[in-house]
Length: 498
Ligand SMILES: [Zn+2]
Image (cartoon, rainbow, N blue to C red; front, side, top):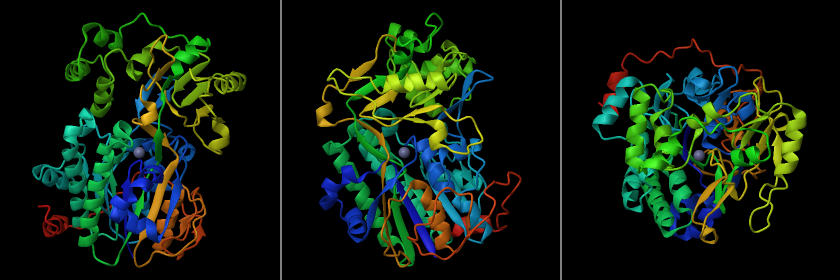
């Protein structure tokens, strides 16, 4: 059994369907079988990729977004690969003698030893010590491999060629592993970036056409024995603008933002720094210890891009009262008690925009959507809306409207991901609303590996039903070290990496 999963970050049929005639490769998959893949709540790349690779929900994983609040230390911690302790698809495969290659999946930095190869994906901070085995990274560096191209920062349509090159590099690199591995996972992350910025613009369409061409090349090179699954970690939809949750919480009296202290947003707004200079200044501040050095480079870049005038989390954590009635990490809200949560929830459901439309259709209780979690779960989770729910504190600003939102130019995450597959072992099944966490059990089932009973998801039989559900431990053995073959260097040479 050979399985290659290509993750198209943020792909949704809503966007791709009208374009399918110009996306012949994706269309050839969709014509055979396709479905919507329901992402997790919240549908964010972190934790969604780990939901995919572990078959668990965010509550089981104890990770709900890119950062986690530490209420004792009163600070936010950046989530990394080390925040997760649950085994992933490749850990189970390795135990059963199958080698895996995991290329560019977000949430995999720092990399871990697996039985095979791992190349960390976005949010790595820096491109340093980002592969296992380590020497693979040095070879990739020499060949000009980049985790994220300049487009990720610039969002400049003129840089889109680099984004296409980066897709090609990821696929080329992955192809090298198909000689030896039984399972290859590759995430093409830039689809998410392009959609955030461009949504359904001609730039986005032409980018997708390039992705489709690269996929055609990849599939052509791939041996026929491979089953190929195209999926996404979450879907997407257009936005009308942004809703500033912290402003709302302050206006309603649930939090008080101490606006007197040092703040990057004020500073940058005052001196009118542009992106490059803001980034350079933040890097300097980090070196001098003013900015927590746990914050990865990519996060600083993100903050810098939102300058001037905006404030992100590192300003926030010194400003919020950690004992306040509510601490928000949009779309999550931690509250002092259930009564406060009830009150906030019912008020949020009443919020209307300038068109008089209700902004928030649903606010979930964390305990309902993350049952049996053994970590503190957020008390409330706002369901994705037509507005981006922002973490940024912008005193006095409750809404920002995209001037041209009717052109659907900007977009953000929804739960409507995609799933489609082709190959010799792919079964003609009737899809029954599969969920992202069903993929790990589905893949294990295809390989005939017993599916741990503790996994939330279930095999949907897409790659055959060859196993049973058993009480297999889902804990990762943190002491476990996968012995690489002593001739790993030889193999890398054979694959053309050394
Ligand atoms: Zn994503």
